[in-house]
Image (cartoon, rainbow, N blue to C red):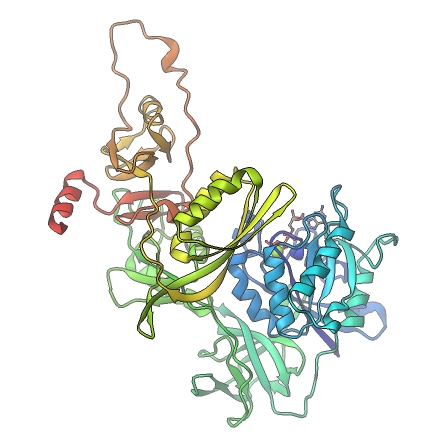
Length: 603
Ligand SMILES: Nc1nc2c(ncn2[C@@H]2O[C@H](COP(=O)(O)OP(=O)(O)OP(=O)(O)O)[C@@H](O)[C@H]2O)c(=O)[nH]1
Ligand SMILES: [Mg+2]
């Protein structure tokens, strides 16, 4: 069968998943409206794609009686923190649909994914989506896209891109804005016209390379990737060839292809297709699975190295074990070992014993792991994330990122001031109408804890996108925290009366009637120092006829501590306690005397 392999790429929220869902529906691959690509619970809750996923559609439909083409589609995440995931996928497909919101135009992540695509020599199809929005300006957006291609040094052939206009939400595509259309046929036709059929030489020896991993309790590790040449049957012997030079032989136990969202077991796979293989426990992203030991390696797939680390430990707070099902060190270890099977870029050092050091690609990477664990019933605590410092050629180096910031004019001052304080080097600054776009190179260390502040500083209106630059010489001390922690000195139930007084002195993380313990961080204080307070104190009963003011206590809604926010705002001597129902920040040493003693011992 004729096969086309494409990925859908874009800035976050520009409509990739909606379009993929609509393509599946158009071709009859899914019937139910509620079934979609963002299948993970966390993705549904957040409304963003976290894991890239593949689907296959057949066009025209299998029942049409005509010659059918199989289109393998990879839906990628648009959030900048998952950029390296997109990069991996791009290596394994033949063309991309570059989606651009017709109102917003190209955004920082559009540039990132387009640059990677052009560098790989891909010839994108431009899809201007959301043309139904009242403020949509497709001509303007198309002009910006063209400029972006030019800026990124596109070849003449790449510049001569096809354009399709879509309303992904309604499953409509048009080649010209003035066309009448009720379906996605114009887009499907463009794909068949512009994307070349996947080379399908089955006479050569088998070669396969995974770009994604999956895990199955019965089958073990699964590799999802592309068959570059040849055929393979279940039961065949193969060689897993690694770029380190290592060669491991193995046997394929099961093979799958994709149909819509489901995988279909097949006896044989052949060149051109995107498939899933089972039976190779040592398989990793970028390895070459070959029929012959002497076969050449396929080019490596780059995997970003970890940039931050933190410790995972058993929860030992006074509330430990109240809310979680899996709480022991062994249970946490087993869960982390399972995670290593599929989580690309994650590393774990199990050797310390009483804690495990987890290395990840950023706060969000770690936060998603923690969020998944708590949903499964785990309870644990983690230390503050730190950046990974390395010595490269005798120079102490740390990870750097390039961040693009878009803010309304009035907020640019505070952003520029804070970036400078965090050792950001301005690379470029451009004014566009009432907006300012500033680009910085900044140590990841300076960015830790900033995103949350950024949202507050720009009243939720600014956009900040980062891209990993690599390790560079250490930028020196960064002084960041200008708030202190407000700590409970007591264990009990927080009361409105006490909280109403405390909210005068800082921002609270808890509301009334919440159980607190001694040493728990219940808020922050504008003054740089920690402050021990009593949140459980009730109003003294006096003889004076009580006023109505007691009932009418007005509390500002607390700033709820999520896992991501917690990782950002916690201090070095604190832990983030995570259970299925709560996220709390606490001092590592709970009693004030204990902390004083420890402070004296260390000074
Ligand atoms: N008005 C309008 N809204 C759309 C259209 N397509 C998608 N949306 C909306 O845009 C939002 C984001 O759509 P998604 O498909 O999740 O975007 P995405 O690009 O997959 O997002 P990430 O995977 O998180 O990067 C949703 O609320 C959609 O309903 C469209 O054609 N018109
Ligand atoms: Mg998506």
